[in-house]
Length: 247
Image 1 (cartoon, rainbow, N blue to C red):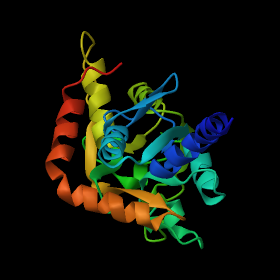
Image 2: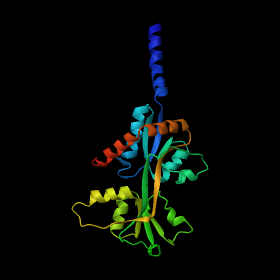
Image 3: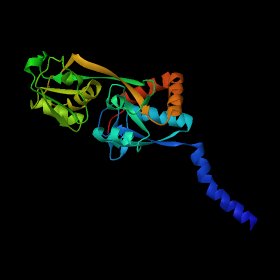
Image 4: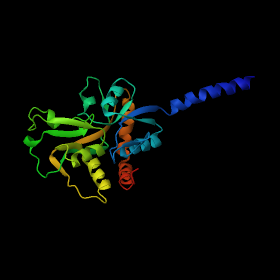
């Protein structure tokens, strides 16, 4: 009888011990197809950011549940405690302007975003409409000193839609992350008449990608240590993404 009770107690205790040994956290990522950074296809999240998090998990035993969320919603979910972390995040974005104290990791990727058009010159006075992804903020258009005035902003759900809107001349400019736009051009240029896209560096911004949390600073400290000790691993992950065939 005692052996039976002992076995039953161990069966009850084992899941608790496993949970204590391997903490699990929910990480929110934008629900959009942003190659090579991150993408969500039929619930499978992949890309450079997810692979960095998964490698950290494999090395440390910290388990991530990667949850793709619409950009406009995932900060609300984060602030209200339903997401433990955000990736990517940046102090200049919405979460950084909140009264809620947010803790950021060291940067583990950089990404440049800016205007893309069909003309080599960009005259702000001639721009009437800009298209970007829902949830993005274009600082150049909200700055009181901006040379852009009276510009209408339209929103689409993904990179492909934005590129197609521009190619069909239904907008003056699009605002996207450059590496994602270049990857779309590379994948979609085969067998088609060339469309010349111009990347306007003058009005672009380079963002640091960080991991952000409100409640788990110790995990951020552990992640930062791992980043410092694994710079070669990050290079390997970048190489694996750039040589992969996207689904």
